[in-house]
Amino acid sequence: MKKRAFTLIELLVVISIIALLIGILLPALGAARRTARQMQNSTQIRGIHTGLVLFSQGNNTYYPGINTIGTLVTNTVEFRFQELLDDNYFTGEYVISPSETKTRWTTGTALTAANNLSYALLELGSGASNRRNEWRDTSNSEAAVLSDRAKQNTTTAFVKSVHTNPTASTNEWRGSVGFNDNHVTFEATHDQLDLQYGDDSTTDDNLFAGAAASDALMISAASGTVAGTNVMYD
Image (cartoon, rainbow, N blue to C red):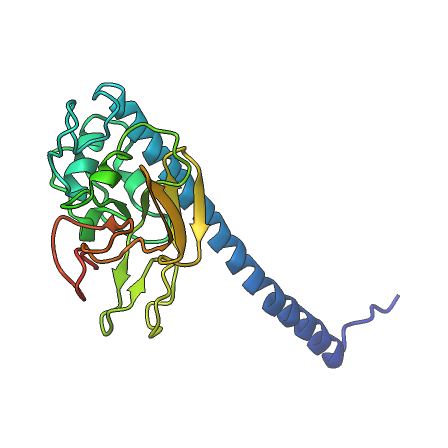
């Protein structure tokens, strides 16, 4: 029996259908990967908060950076994370977002926000006594204590994150925010959150506002000033 071969037109039709399917599926696969990374990112932030709570059990309910009598010891992100890592509350990979590549922290090395950390912690500096009251084991669902850090575009002062377009000339921070009752949300903005610290409840809070602002803010590193804030971008 004579076998019938595909004609050139049939082959072209099959190739066209395959190309069309690839064009349809690739964006969906990319979106699925982004969603999976965001979910893993939120899981890591929830795990870091669990480490904070475990640490607090031996520190009179306070998280690292505040001593057992409630006095601020340090406001630096690096020191607070280093205490948790040195005591093995989680591994070095846990402070690196799945959406970016950084150097894994190892015992005996110094942390830097630019090289080893993907996350920001609650700013506890001057004038932040209301926030210090929430830097401890509480169940306040409106107190944010950690988040994806802020990044600065190399050519602008607009706030970015690892989840946003690095070249857009707008504030496009998006990221996970962990709250003191251990829930995590993925927020589309850094400056429209409604938070509460102690008796201070405000609307449209800015996670990366300047140090003189009355609302809550996060700090990404030990020092550095950019565009009037006390947050170091990298």
